[in-house]
Length: 348
Image 1 (cartoon, rainbow, N blue to C red):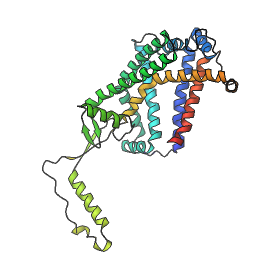
Image 2 (cartoon, rainbow, N blue to C red):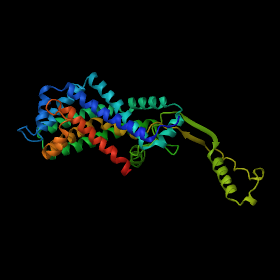
Image 3 (cartoon, helix red, strand yellow):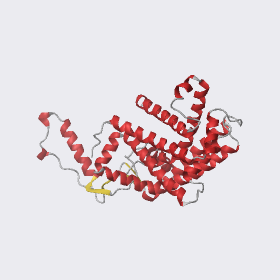
Image 4 (tube, rainbow, N blue to C red):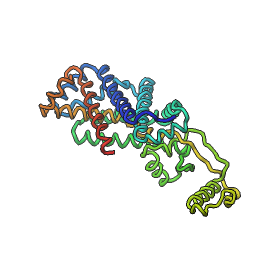
């Protein structure tokens, strides 16, 4: 299968999927939020809350958060909704991987033969790797929102947001390391083990974070070639020597020297076809954290635009802060994402 679709269309498709997911999340929050919570958010956005500019939003957002995922965390309802969010987040990050590493994704799809297998591989890996850390990250985000609401201040909120990012990263890395230690991971076709701190650092730094499929999740079958690697290297060296020789001095193929015989006990060349990048399952764990960050950024920008006056009058016809504050924040969050998408081709 070849990615014959123009890169611009794939880029637009990834933008639509990401903004559509964010909009659906804020729209769902608007639908399930109580009138009291929406009034508190509206007053915060319009600078009308007497408790200060930061006082109401953590508590109000925590209420919306509970309405979306369920008030009881230890319940099947919350777990299933977390799983749905995990699959959606992995799908979005997978599409971003296709955009960022188009050639690699095309080669990977050619190896699979069918794009449907990619979706099945990603889904199976998601259920095996992402459900647990995403569920735990959801619980951790609930506690962070609760702590924010106790004493809301700019420094405390920024510190807790940083803590949320750190804990989420540690949760995702721990589960991925546990999974990788069971299936082993591959680098340049060789199986490595996570048996020391150095190999763990190498795995995280060179395999997980770069979002590459060259050293992806080994969920597909291993292919073993019976020709020893030494013979292939010898044949490649002979061909290179023949091509580099002058035309009149090139030896005929029949007179070429035979390749060196295989050494006794030499293992055959082994190629492992890897699965999707490990990084897909690492970055998608930040789903709930990103929602909190977008909520805070969108609310801050709306308050700033209102303070500037001119910008606020330009956006006022698009926004309905009094009646639909969460949808208004979702629109601003999508404007932020769109701005990032416009800048990415320039800085990349």
